[in-house]
Structure formats: structure tokens, C-alpha cells
Amino acid sequence: VVDELRDVGLQNYISLPRIAAIGTQSSGKSSLIESVVGYDFLPRGGGVVTRRPLELRLVHLSTQEYAPDTAWAVFDKVSDQKYTDFNKVREEIERQTEMVAGKNKGIVNDPIILTVYATGAPDLSLIDLPGITRVPVKGSDQGEDIEKKTREMTLHYVNDPRTIILCVVPANQDM
Image: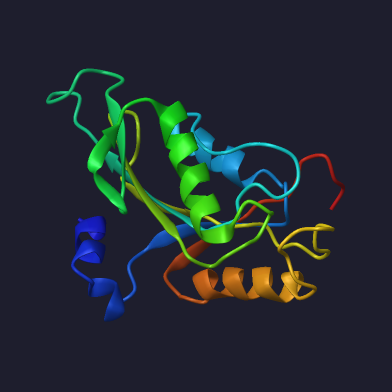
């Protein structure tokens, strides 16, 4: 229901609940989101990987209507295509990221909207944000203001009082 309200533009008038995963670069935000969803589909690698916000809408499918382990994904910009191979979902996220943010590690606040329908998924809206980055990658499209840019992007999503902030800290660091 919440996502249907989002689709008709109700978020322009009231704030609908969502969970935003925030943290520094490579802290495990995308891995945590994948474990909630139950599918391996987000781009991985060293350094800057999530370069655009990913607004992920999970829709639970009833096991009375669908076979167990039924799942598919639909991108807002490619709504006529249903992805059942989650490796192809990863490839499409990478393609859409490169199309907007370039191939040279640029970070852009232009979200990718992805809906995952699955019998094993809860009804939930999650946002996977690029990590807060202090130093630009040498030879990349990141400017010297990358920390300001990634902080402002994070604040854009978490300033909404109905956003639940999920702060992810690497488990290999002392706090």
C-alpha cells in the first residue's frame, strides 16, 4: 500500500515510512540490505561501488498465490521488463549507474528505483545510499567536495522525520 501511495505522488504531500542505510564507504550497507532481501543482486567490489541511491521497494508475495521461492524485480525506468535472474538485476543497476554517474567513480544523487516482488521478502522500503566519503578517488570524477556531497545526499534522505535511520558500522573496526 505504501508503495502504491508513493507511485501516485502522495510523498509530495506527506512522508511515507522507509529505512535508509547510512554509513561510510565500504561499511557493509549493501550487504546488509541484501541479507534483508534474501537475494544477492547488488554490485560489489572494492572502493566506491554504490554511486547512486537505490530506492528498493520490497513487496511480499503470498505463498498461497505463488510457488515458494518466487521472485522477480522491476526497475522504474525499465518497467516493461521483469527480471527473474538477479545477476541481470546487478548488471542493470551497474548499467543505470554508469549511464548517469559515468564510468569513472562519479557519485550522483539521482536514485535508481527498484521493486522486488518475492515470497520471502517483507513489505518494506529501503534506501541504499552511497557511503560518506572523505577523500576523492584520484583520477576519478569525484570533486574535492566529495565529503560535502555525500553528506548532503545522506541528509537529504534522513532529514525526513518518518525515515528510520539504519546506521551501518564496519564490524572490523573498534567504536
